[in-house]
Length: 131
Ligand code: FES
Image (cartoon, rainbow, N blue to C red; front, side, top):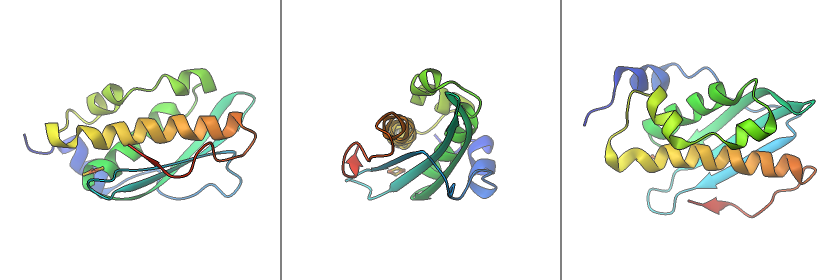
């Protein structure tokens, strides 16, 4: 399976690259086999994700997955942000090759860790998590 146009477009023109200086949710994950690393930054106000950004050192699928994940959770409550699944990310990208599904899992895990950080009052829940 080749990359979809949706994925290629996200990879070439991601909308959510960067850090949030006053982020109160930060999640960092990596994958040991491919070496990709993803960081998600959240700004949460009144239990709503008002902004989401990412920095990803990784493949096109990881970058596109990070970008989609940020869009999908912006405006969600913290509880709904935690419900983000990698299937939602894959659907938004019009599919991923089987060997790239883990890139979408990395994004949903990074969101979950960022929410956990928020709930822990700004403490990293774990050292870098490997997915
Ligand atoms: Fe590992 Fe994309 S190849 S995150």
